[in-house]
Length: 282
Length: 356
Image 1 (tube, rainbow over the protein chains, first blue to last red):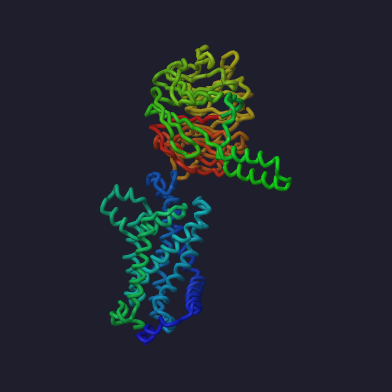
Image 2: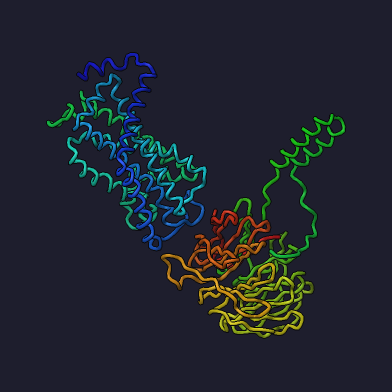
């Protein structure tokens, strides 16, 4: 079925039709998020636990030092806030691709794929929807963190938005790329452990990289090569109205690569989705 | 910087843009009709507002270990010059006329004078051995110096730059301040754990008030109603009634996650309205913000390591603190009660003073 639709798709769809599709997908994702109240709560509780408990315990252990974009000494809570924001997006990116696996298992994906619009666009809409949901979570987190004395400059709340959208897209497309290879919901937990935790811990989210370098130069290189590190740094700088150009470049390139990868992987004519014997939507 | 100081030099010339606009305005004033004049006037006002630079001050920081004084521009927040001074510079303060910076160089047993214009050492004052902190009277004529090693306070005539005499006090004198009316000199002795009240006319001790261990610094409220004395080892700030010579209250500190011993109050800064006090807590790396009326800490601000002394900019917009172990100076936005910047200076920064 799909070979016909994909060939016909590029021909003349109006902008309004694309928009309808986009709104439809974003709306569905938004509704799903709002209806899953536990998910919203857990999305908030996770970083807050880190903030309230982990940061409180480590406050005195990790030495303080001034590194850009900070201009003075900061508490550990303030340091890990951008890392936790990125963590929210990482979990959310993985979770919304988890929902793709779920959709595939439950057959909802068929409904979506009936759409005559190009599949790449559908995936992009899905990605945008996931990112939008992650923005809600991040801003809710920032709101609570404000009471915990994590008070970036007021303009920072605005300047961080583009950075959050970019990092949300990157982590979402990574999740999508990974989810394309997963046939069953149960397998996903393993991937979470193999992707989320290494990515999160081997990054600048919890400790500055100069400190990692002191401990192990090799680990430092791993952290430097980790795209998640750059998502964190991009967010960290943007929160203080600055741009970290290297991180920006890495995040943009990774987003493009992951997105192309995801689109190819979900293309039934050549994607990973076709290979497995238990392919859901085939 | 407190009370009356005289400034001899005239106000600085306005920036060229303002001057130009002013001249232009004067020229058209003669020809233009009234409504145009009003328009021009408001334009001029807007322009003058736009180009008027934020007033920059100059801060001098004594670096105890590197034997230098760092000069900081409060506009760019950078060190613009490093002045070589004698050995172990600690107490540092501007003369009331703003012409000289006095810096106590303890290991050279003298107080050096830095010319604020040329930013170099030009002369010295005869103190006793190991001068640490000093205070000058409101007129800027008499200087009282605490000599840490020989348990005396030296009295110096600032105009003649000559020694007038010594006052015997407790062991290891350090904190020095003068009451706003100029009648009482306060000296704290670190080992005797007392605040000595000295009558400035008779130069005799009139009262001794016992405070907690190791009193380091004393500061009057601007309305003279209270004297605040910090006790480094005791971990408190005692509030003394200067009339009755007795402790009427104490400020205590508690920072979650920090050992009690790490909280060692030293420097005290009081806003001119006497509403807020800032207290440096040494190795706790924090400045406590205290509500003067309730004597309770409202906030702790994280600064560099081992913070001891501080100084307000004359407009009281910023408070600068010296962080000895991390070798830097932190800048606090007084209104927002937030640390906005930290600037690297020399080794072991101790005291700080800002040009009036």
